[in-house]
Image 1 (cartoon, rainbow over the protein chains, first blue to last red):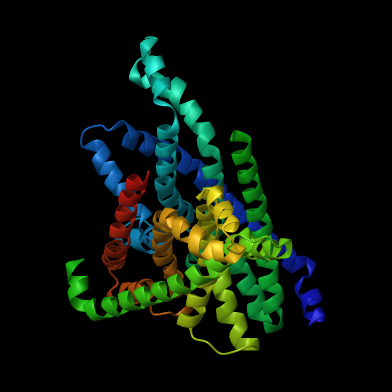
Image 2: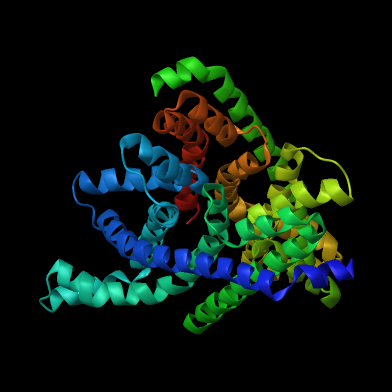
Length: 218
Length: 212
């Protein structure tokens, strides 16, 4: 058994797995940045209540939030070719993650704005700022600080969710571990231990960060 | 999309049934396990708190799919044979139980500490006070977040598709590849998921507003 572990963790295999971790991080980071931008816009639209627009945006957000991410992955990778667009694997994964996470972040942004004391906006307006100036310069910066722990938590689930993209053959850790243990079934347990450990370390450190940020605010 | 329902209605309904069945089983067991670990974490014993913390952190920080694949791939080889549905449901239960534990713990902490002190002062043991005084009050607070966990559970049950669990997502793939109308097939699956998840999340939002 021990020998299996030693053989399984050969430098080549480990390098191959770590390459998968890099893909996981790449997809997650690009997606979270995209989601933050789109999510902020959607969240603000939902918050400010523009006639009809906000209601429609709100409904679309609710629909996407209530679908499994896996289904959205299938839409972007297997569904889009049906409409004549054929995305590559990594862009398809990033697209799906971004669509899904934007709606999650939109809700975080909206509740972050709501958590800012309404006196801030009133004060800004009383000092002659327009509504949008007040929102942009006074309310949003304060909301952002309140949102950071929630965004970090969302990033953790994003990192975990990238494993779903094995199904569209994204070469991340889980996918690569399957390739390794597919060649030698003795490596199954060592591979599961290795990827569970890698995911655990990344996500646990992030959750400590989120908790630390939360405490600092309180 | 309508013709997908017409042509594959039975398959979709069967998938929907499997998804609901798996979600309900996982919900019941993860509620029990999650509440158990939440209680351990709030217990006076330091060792028990450590065990609970370790359990929660372990299953919270490993992707659901990795847990599910572990039961699907490793268990049949070394422990006991199980089909995809069982492996998926066990994975889902363990993963969700860690989130439910956190939710229930937050609920327990939101109950005023005076409740526990009063109960103890009246001669109840710690566990009696927890069972009869604190938990009933805590559960009222945690119903909306638990409902949201259930929505996540239903969505996450789509990982059964990876292990041949014959759930909605799995059937969606079967239909997509046999009808070659991927967009329509996945849209039909999406509608069925929304029929379960949307009403629950709207109702939970309503409850949250009423409690606040």
